[in-house]
Length: 86
Image (cartoon, rainbow, N blue to C red; front, side, top):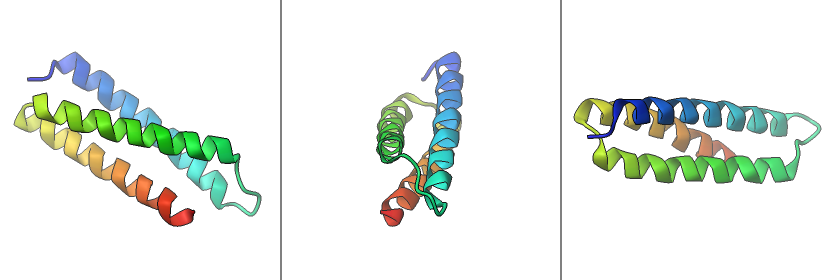
């Protein structure tokens, strides 16, 4: 079972990463494109988050897995947006 504080910390990190990546993606959608390096870094952060999610899901309780699964869906959707934008 994953520790509750570890899970809470991870979910906060996930939320922050998702917000930053969404802002980067939104900036890239404007007429003036955003910073390409920032765009690539946001993609890396999302992939790292997704990798960590997979690892954490193995140690989580069923209730925790549900929370993590919802977060994983958000990460995957945003990753898809980045890929399709390219």
